Length: 87
Image (cartoon, rainbow, N blue to C red; front, top):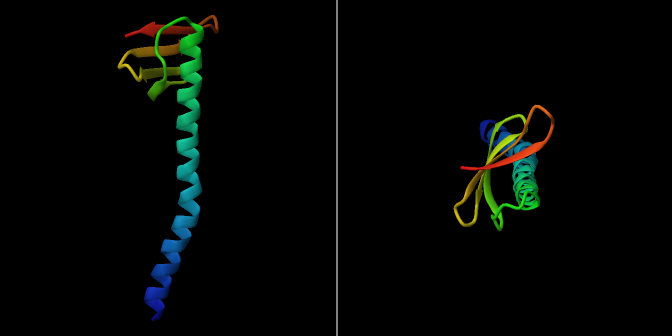
């Protein structure tokens, strides 16, 4: 293996070792968000089953989509209370 190929191989391995855990951490956060939102929606007495996707709109403000297609906005109001609104 010549010097250029060795350098490229080293860059690929290094990138994989560094980026892999960072991507896994993002996936873990997404799973945590959907589980948390599922629990919050259920505690508010809204039908959902399970949140399958969530989009963060801002700090403490999420759009959640349930397995049945129902969508909710979950946010924290000025008084610090969690609000779940069906969209």
